[in-house]
Length: 271
Image 1 (cartoon, one colour):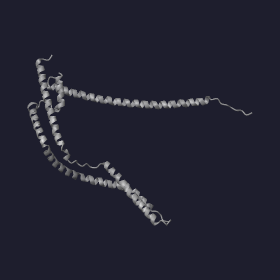
Image 2 (cartoon, rainbow, N blue to C red):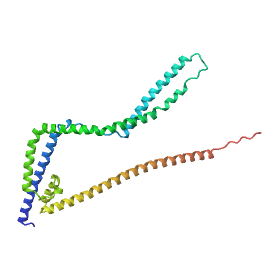
Image 3 (cartoon, helix red, strand yellow):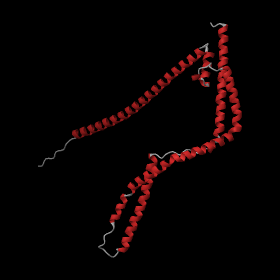
Image 4 (cartoon, rainbow, N blue to C red):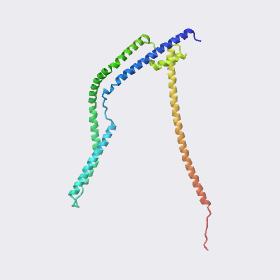
């Protein structure tokens, strides 16, 4: 049985961990409010320009090939129409079928033009992004001015919370686990009697996290095994159905063959 001193120490530890938990929650809440205040004016930023990739290149190839094909078709039919009007009465004149060779040009030209277009456009991206960065720096100053009425009270509350942390918790709780979720778990561990010191609580937290990681890995393996089992079951049903159909066909064919062989044969003799 634990002594009254141990119970008192555990209660004090619970209270101190609870105080840290609520303080960290205040930090997180205030930081979220501050980010939200800036986010409300984020539309003032200009998004950076990204370079075109293979998808855009092939899109321009497709569009270019279609456009050039239409142009070539117009040239071809115009040439044929002009030839028909000129040599309408001359049956020996040969139509300008060589013009049809123009239909071989749209795709190569589209490949070249699309490559040039993408290269030129991508070459301008760095300079364009430099201009955007300069504009965004100005926008950041403007956003800071617009958000200042909301941010100043939040900064004051954050300063108060930081002071409280320095005075009560500096160097006390491991930095790696200094977040409201892990601190809350440590409080629960102490509250459940699994630890009576902070180090014991942190060790129990680490062990719980390791155990949870193993459970997650095991659950993933079980899910994969179940998926493989379902696939095997479906394949088994399909294969069984196919085999059943083949056997049924063979039995039916055998029955027909036996029926033909067992049928009486009538022989007629000439007198």
